[in-house]
Length: 126
Image 1 (tube, rainbow, N blue to C red):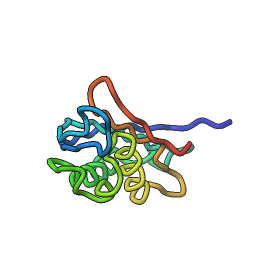
Image 2 (tube, one colour):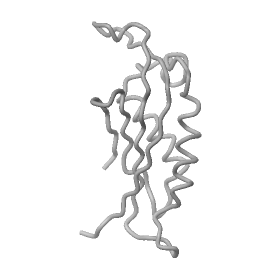
Image 3 (tube, one colour):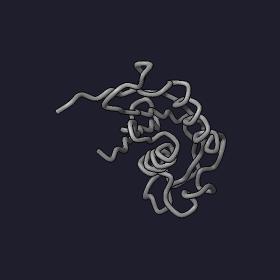
């Protein structure tokens, strides 16, 4: 089995949500300062000795999270029809980043969304 390089970038956004049909306090409107960790992987480096430029990962991640920042997630697609759980947020961000960052050599390895300093959800397809 060959090795793999994994780059990790951390971003954040602030947003409110409420969990539909949740039997507890989280059914009510509340907010979080969400932290997003993005992992990009490649089995080989480019001619410069990089997986991908950190600047590109940061820029694309900030573009994706900017539409979530200072919003009520329940009003945004796809969270207007699915619950804006940490799991669904991680899955959604993963999909959006994959469109922009996946290539023949690189792919999104995982996206972890931290709801608090002690609670996160990670989505990966490997």
